[in-house]
Image (tube, rainbow, N blue to C red; front, side, top):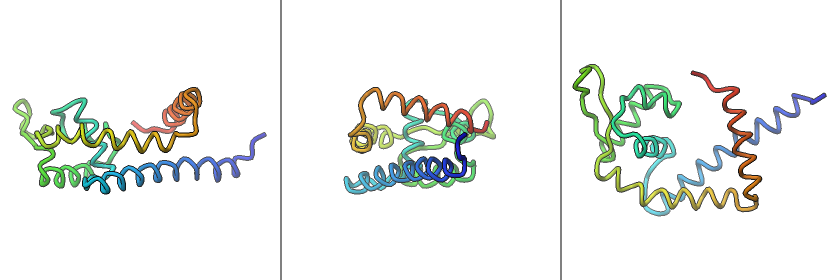
Length: 147
């Protein structure tokens, strides 16, 4: 039988620290290349690159961040001309979030940096190991994610 106390210490520690280390690595790489973009802002940009023009609430649930956190991120990103809010014509209570031309142009600049950092993190793993790691992490995430 597994000793869940030891497993939690090892696995919980590794999952948490690996995620933070990857976030820090990407943030530092962005800064080193002249882009003051946080990992949270990166998450918003990545989502909007695939689905531009969504409500703040939908964006919040899509990136699994609290609404108040997303509002602060949007405020900062709007001041930096990465995104813009446009009132929803169908429901004036909602703002739709769109990328600006600046936000769209960041994709070609930031994605190669992030890919490079991810490749560094995975450099000693085979394709099969990467596939297995991805599958297993998805399973763990799906077991604990909240709606």
